[in-house]
Length: 293
Image 1 (cartoon, helix red, strand yellow):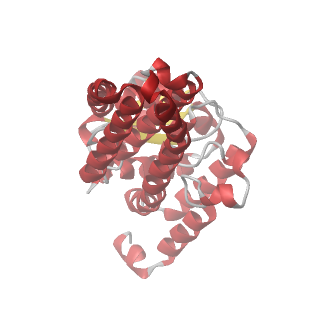
Image 2 (image 1 turned 45 degrees about the vertical axis):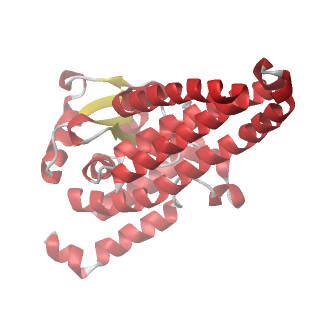
């Protein structure tokens, strides 16, 4: 299922780029942009994790750089039955975390500098278990490609906008008027498409990773407390990150800018209070108590 999502997203990006090329220079432009789309799809599959780390300004670290963090990740990944992931730290003071990579053998778990200082060890364990759950459930490739694709679509929208302003990139006169209108439409539709891609993928994945992460660490309430704390910090401490990568984080790094109402409805993350309620219900369930007795 996850691989099918990746295929659909890549096919959608290819179609979008070919349409933009066609609006620019007809068949020749469509062919040029098809080749560009193929190269971009190849790069997104193999190197999207590096692109995401760059969006967060994160650096891969060695075990000697953060031995306690490494030991904690190692213990939890063994409980999850996973290979040891690469560990990275982003310099942001906002407490947050995410996982990226194309499969469990090439996974990266990244935390911010702020999370290592501002939450308890018990809560950090819940957060890391959540991120390892994304790895176990193979959410990372879909989420990572969605993030890089959203950035690419934003770039496409910008190209289309400037192309429309300058008359369809100086295409043939008999196509300029129609091409300009198509480019204007592309500039409007592309950002909406990027938002819908992120919205459709991220919300359900977070619920699944919460439940699986609670099973990995054995303490749903630790993750619940962590989510409440991270949400509170996100309202007070800004994070400088490309918005395209926001949906990968365990809580929305732009929570402080969202507020309530319609904008929240289209958030890439489900409401934190709903996630906490589900974790509390899981902790109270007889089935969970029996398994973790």
